Image (cartoon, rainbow, N blue to C red):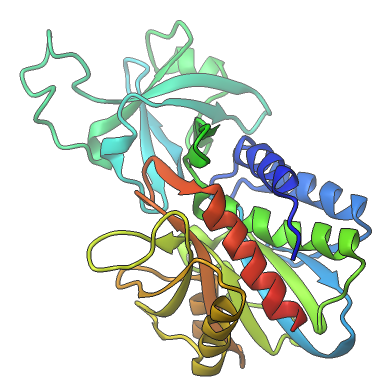
Amino acid sequence: METNMKFTLNLLEEIINIPSPTGYCKNVMSYIEKVSGEYGFKTTKNKKGNRIIEIEGTDNSYCIGIPVHVDTLGAMVRSVDSDGVIKITTIGGNMFSTLDGEYCKIHTRSGKIYTGTMLSTSPAVHVYPDAKSKERTEENMMVRLDETVKNKKDVANLEIGAGDFISIEPKFTVTPSGFIKSRYLDDKAGTSCALSLMEMFKRLGTKPRCKVKIIISCYEEVGHGCSSIPEDIDELVAIDMGCIGLDLSCTEHDVSICAKDSSGPYDYDITGRLIELGKKHKLNYAVDIYPMYGSDVSASLKGGNDIRGGLVGPGVHASHGMERTHVDGVENTLKLMYAYLTE
């Protein structure tokens, strides 16, 4: 299982730096279509915009779906105050305390992009008595636009209005010690693993044991990404993020195997097989329970699809904030999934 981590990390950096809050994934989807085409795999698209990459197996009578998601947390313009301050509405489960002071972009319906900064509505300690104590919530956050605006009309003249998407600067960094720091490793780290499977099959001249469909989901963060899937899929094994903290055993160096999340237990046999392969190949892995978590497998099951499901992913620290994983965790995830699809 010879991986090409240079390819995986370069791909991860590329897709993380393409803004894609839920509902605004067209640009990153176009990039993924280009990459898959370069490796000889065609993509199709369902009506909601999920991309599906099919990989032929040695036995195509059985199909494994690999859901990953490129949609991220973000925000939208909710309204504009009389003084030109932009109020927001959240997309996904943002932790607003981590957004205070972050650079952002506003993507207008006309195609223009403006920069700004996400701030508390009491942004200065020299002015506001509650600058430090004010709770960072959606209602107490705003965007300071990097344009000269004095009122609502000035903002409207820039063609900024309600419903425009707001993306946050991810700040992608790989340290000399191998740590990957960035927003939106959930789930662009998992996406880079799934797309790296294409590279491995092509480079090694191998095939999966059955037909594989990689599903690039664009509505996972709001709960319905894979609520509908192709009818020929027999099982789903999602690559999402592994959880770290409290009584969980996963670290950033591990591939996490989820036995149960808030939607209930994952398939006993799939989970057992993943554990067996982790042991066999001496991978760094952990088996954990995610009490406050749901995946695209959860959405698929709730959508009434007749499948069984599993869930893996690299350990990610500080999810929905300034996240961090390690090259080891990404590589262990990629190796585990390659083994699961080929053995």
